[in-house]
Length: 339
Image 1 (cartoon, rainbow, N blue to C red):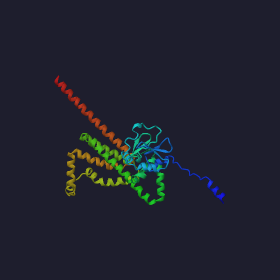
Image 2 (tube, helix red, strand yellow):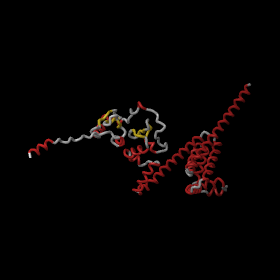
Image 3 (cartoon, rainbow, N blue to C red):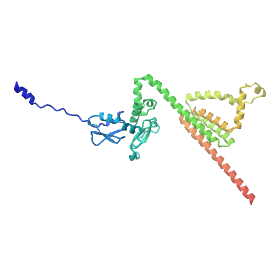
């Protein structure tokens, strides 16, 4: 028995191995470390890009969390990384990943060097890949991410959500189309105001001829549109405008004028005032132009807008040439009279 106990005491105890934590690139995508940690040459260290400080991570990620709660780190982070990459501001390479300019994701980020993007809401600088940008919005700004219209890659993601929860997806799709239609109508209203500004510098006679040409141009384009929904809306507008056309085309006798509804009298007075004030007349034409343009599809509308602008600019150039020629004639007559 003594020999057995002695042999047990003589056996060496196994030493527990201590695990050393190495840097992992996937930490850069975690919300707690997003945008401010980076790799060092030493695999057991990480670098804070905001504080420009090396952190020992051999004991684990807890050291990174302690650094994230430090007051100095919070102050540097709140500045929005104004001093980050100031010494390395270079143009992006040709093979860098770029966003589609029409993508709604780009409205929430600013371009940064080295294929990175800066969040305009929180100042975090991350990789410019669309998946990374959308993931940041989803995790940090969830309310904003719900309003995005996704690109082809994101559409696969939305289809998965649609299979899991069909009612929510069905109610969201019409809202997106209404929001896009509202933006299109706002663009048409801005175009109407632009046309009004161009017409105000043209003499009244040429301005009236231009308005007739513009209306004919839109009506011709409308006839070529074969969309059933557009054609139905055309009929409703034509029915509203039929009384005004009949009043201008059909002769009205003296008895008909006396029996006409008294509600027409304010309209006549408004017409007389509008004829004396050309600016008000042009402003009303701008509103009418906008209502007509809303009946066209997007492609036809863009083509018609270009033709309208070319027509107005061409007329303005002709007016300027006529004014110049008249001035030259008057100057020539004065010189002849002096001689």
